[in-house]
Image (tube, rainbow, N blue to C red; front, side, top):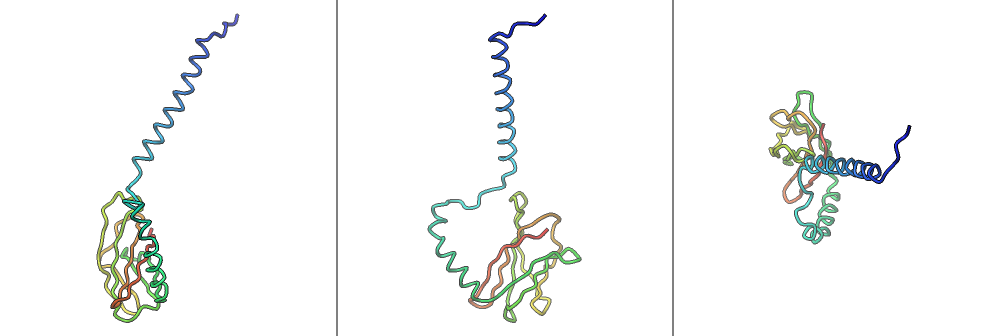
Length: 148
């Protein structure tokens, strides 16, 4: 013997189905908000006003012909190998966690000769975004590279 399908059955199916959809959406929104580490720019309008200046600065930096490779050395320290930089150039780094959760670390690098620079201490474990600044006199190059 089969039961008759009534409006109450249809109501239960609709409420149950939409409850699952809403619950999944709330879960996904909570996970997205909890894993977001910060903002890219504080004010997009102000950033748009500086865009052309940033492009000009990037062109000046590219014209210098400097290049750098960033890696973790065998003993865990940050190693920067440069090409085309003048002798006596200074190197500084700022390390950020890709999601912005850990604190930002900033320190100078010491020259190891032949365009090679090393940090004095080992990098913390994990993935980091390295913001490298090479400078010599009025010239400077800024770049961002990931280090795993």
